[in-house]
Image (cartoon, rainbow, N blue to C red; front, side, top):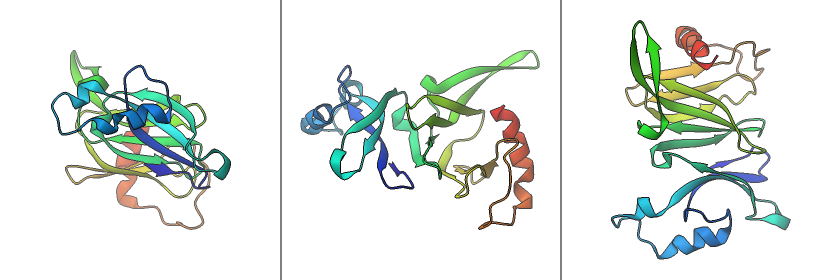
Length: 190
C-alpha cells in the first residue's frame, strides 16, 4: 500500500473475483473466503488500484489494472511527484520471466521492478535481473533522483535515470560506493 504525497489517493494491490469489475462489491464478496484454504489463490485475481481518499469520493476506484504474480510483490510506493507507482518483486515468477540473449546462449531473467503511470496505470518502465530478489524499494525523496532497493542477498542498488537534472538541496552528498551499481543499472533501464 502506498499513499500519494498530497494524501488524496491510496495505491494498493487488492484481491478480486476474476472477471469482476473494479468495484468495492468484488472485494467485499471475498470476505467469506479463507485465504489459508487450498484453492484460494486460484479462485481470486489481483488488481493494482488507485483509490480516492478525498472526502467527496472516499473509496472510489480511480484506476485499476490486473496484476500478474501479485503474491511475489514486496513493495508498492508512490513517487514523490505522485505521478508514478513503483512495484518491487521479492520472488521469481514464471509469469514475469523473460529470456535474454547473450554470447550464443539464452538466460532466464525475471522482473524485479515495475513503474506505472498513476493516471492510467500504464506500464512505463520495467527492470529485469538475473540474480536480484527485492526486499524493499523506495523512491528518492527528491524527484528525478531515482530509486533505491535492497536485495535478499544484502546488496543495495541505486538506479538514477540518465539525464536527470540537478541535485537535491536536502540531500547534497552522493554516495560514491553506489556509482558502479548505478551505472550498470542505468544501462539495464535503457
